[in-house]
Image 1 (cartoon, helix red, strand yellow):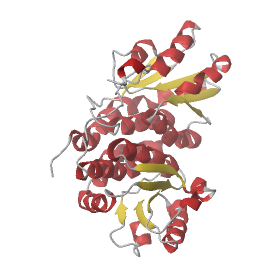
Image 2 (cartoon, rainbow, N blue to C red):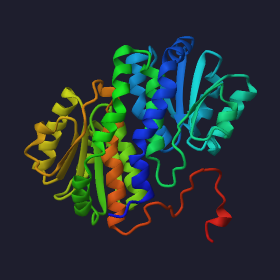
Image 3 (cartoon, one colour):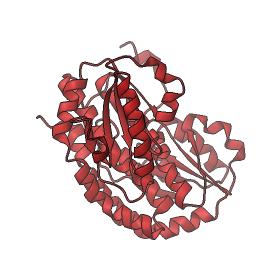
Length: 349
């Protein structure tokens, strides 16, 4: 197997996690105290940055005392009139230079309203203007957002839950668990071989991993050009289930006792309709009736932290399918790592 830059970036996540935990977890109580001084929390980003916010919001629900609003960066102008000194906005932009982030954060800066920034570039517009800067420590990332997405989730987890002793203990275990989750390459290669000829597929998650499924689907679309829809299982059942035909590939993602129980029911139902079911779970023994169709991940002690681990097989799968299709795993046809304004005169060149 030729190791692509994306493969290396996925495996670099262990080191990235260790660096972030060492720098920011000791400060978690300070972050929590600052959160308590705010009445409203806004999390915002675009693309993989936004999905990291969606994946992490459950930790805010559980541990921070806040119910944050998660908004795409291009919708922030609708709430600008309601953002005041009692509101903490956390902007997530891997480049720190995205058009939407610069526009809205610039307005807040002019109004004297402090905000926090999560970015991979300490010299970026976001880093230079945020009151509190959290660096992703991910180095250069040339392919799809894998380690930066995971690093964003981890930073948000520390901000939301790092002050809690139970959560902090679990956070310290994550680098070793990430390493364990990466140990599934043989199964990934088998899945990729089976899926690389598909034209469409679905990624469905239960509970907190509905957001994981959406992030996984983004990577599949970016890298494999397979039309991949990601959603919660519940959303799928309320309408989209009508698209089911025999042989449709569906990957189910779940973690924790109750969510795996639900996942089990959905897997049985979909299989009864002829769906080609595959499962990413922290309870593989529950799905023994699907031989070679289950990829196990370590169990996070807190379900809300499970996206950190369940997303990893999805990252590896996107890389493997693209590689087997002979695509440019580490390049893009239309996407830029810094998404600014459109320049339509260049589109036809």
